Picture 1 (cartoon, one colour):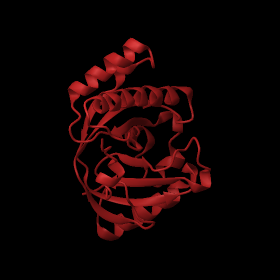
Picture 2 (spheres, rainbow, N blue to C red):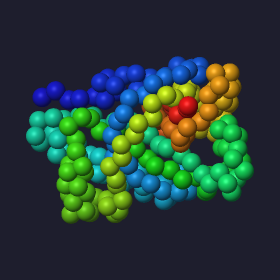
Picture 3 (tube, rainbow, N blue to C red):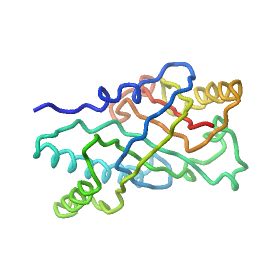
Picture 4 (cartoon, helix red, strand yellow):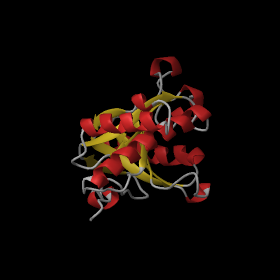
Length: 207
């Protein structure tokens, strides 16, 4: 039985260069869960636990009917109250907005063929087996980013503003403005990868 690997099926989606560039991102659907707070907190860890529990329940159900897939890379949309914090630029925001004040929607992309019904059944399985609390928090999420500026950031998360600044300079040069939430795709497993070797796609929807 063939197994779908989304990083190969949607290669351009999971690929970025070490310089800022303008790309067009196709619509996609995800399992997602929302939260707020420091990504190093226990609350964030529990958010990821429930998201992965449901994602793997979907995977195993698909495998049972002959359409197995590899659970995709973790992603996240990040935002904050701009009125409260003075609407800082994308590269200034990580330094000016406390990590406890960031809101997020964590995402795992689903292959074509997975439906909202699959999500509901997976939630029931997770709740029944008590693999993780809060399975009902996981939502179906359709995303249509379209035009985006992106860059591949290599290194610890704390140095992301350096890469974001390159994106901001590119946007200014091209006359582009932010048009959505800051988007990160975690190509590396940050639980196992040394900080200096982490690879993260940073993406800003623009208009």
